[in-house]
Length: 336
Length: 273
Image 1 (cartoon, chains in turn brown, orange):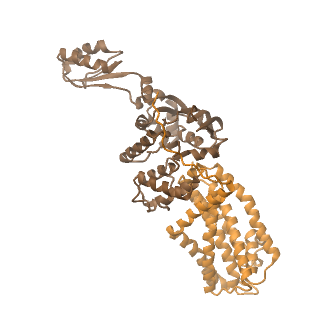
Image 2 (tube, rainbow over the protein chains, first blue to last red):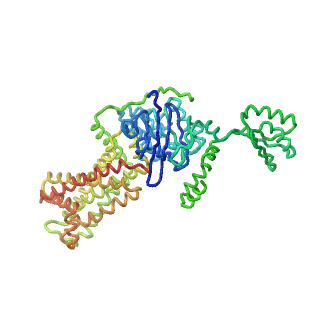
Image 3 (spheres, helix red, strand yellow):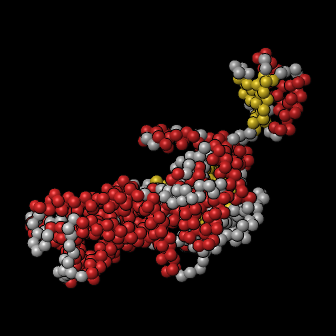
């Protein structure tokens, strides 16, 4: 497994009737890294996960996980992967312990090992107190933790997490991020899908932006941001009368057109290598005796990336998808 | 390039056993799962038991007086029909259970595990068989309480029980196919039941088929439930008929031959969405 990537997908296509769920998806994840699939609802993220975890077959294209073909070697591959889906796939009428023991047995671990792992994971996921309670009494966050624990029974080298934090509150999300970070620190390869830009930013080494079944951009979070464009310096001037003087002072540093908003005394200056300029700008403003209320160097967010790549914000797309009305869809198409 | 971490955790290896071993072992794990659930959802079992009891009381005391049977009392005639109806209706829980697992994403999890593919289905049909056995035992007791007097010997009765279990198992596979083919638990519930009404009522389960109009009688006398009911009735009332029993068994085997592959195929195709 030394030279092969942990996850490799080439030209994956999957059709559902006329819908192209995947339209030639390519992915690669090196061993021990986190690959984030970022995209709105319906982009094809879940379909990709289902193909890579052997649940469905691609209509064309090929994929290898852990060096095993997802179609030809599907049976062998299942002993090397863990999957935690969009909803907690745990049995409500079993206890937390019984759920984990069952999954361990179905991974064909000896009974003793399955029970030991169940207890270890319950401890690791802070579920010891609830371990003998039926899962139907669990909170949403507890169920998701149990679900993740179930996917880790064999300590798989490759883990697939399909929107692991969707529906969790902030605390649950932070706890989940911590767990994932720990796994990655130990060398587990993780493929993570998310609609949350922040989540991809936080967790993923490499991000693949997926839209309409295709990877429309990929790279590290920084690379993606750089692709969208550089940094900008944003100033809020204390006195309206200083606006012109300020523009004169910052003009030498500008890498493009300076935007001036007199009403809220706001000036935006596109720059390159902003952090090095910052001190100089402050000095110059000081020398010109211009007082500023706020001065900040802003870098593009993944939101900006998404907007730049697709021509629309991720949330808009999501809203259009959720409303699920033909009119909304038609509108969405016409704006593309 | 990103610094990658060296993995220290060892992946746990599965035990190496022949695949036939896992066919049974995995089915056992899942059957155990379902049996553990039974006392935890008591209302399900209670309703599964109350319903046939209601039918016993209804036919024994309300309709029974108006139904003429020859050669035995109506309650003796009725109980074979009730037993068959109980296992046939009881088999619908297989499809409902699978549809529920599908909806909750459990089927996706199972399909991502290195377990025997058949186990999700066999585990479910076997546990439903055990559950149905329990309900039939309750019905036997209820029957005795309302005047049912089985004739003949224990061996014949055990043979009748065996036929009922085979029927339960066979109909569970039909139910499994339905449960895996529809899109919701609600649909599994209604689609699982609806076709069983004509099959059980237009049969010899509750009334002699001679009382039916010719066209209905033609259907009633040639459909599987009538054959199974007649075979069971013969075994319980000391007039066993070998050819009826063989036809009944043949129906069950035929159902299994058709619906096991159909449900396995439906299982292989289905993901939760």
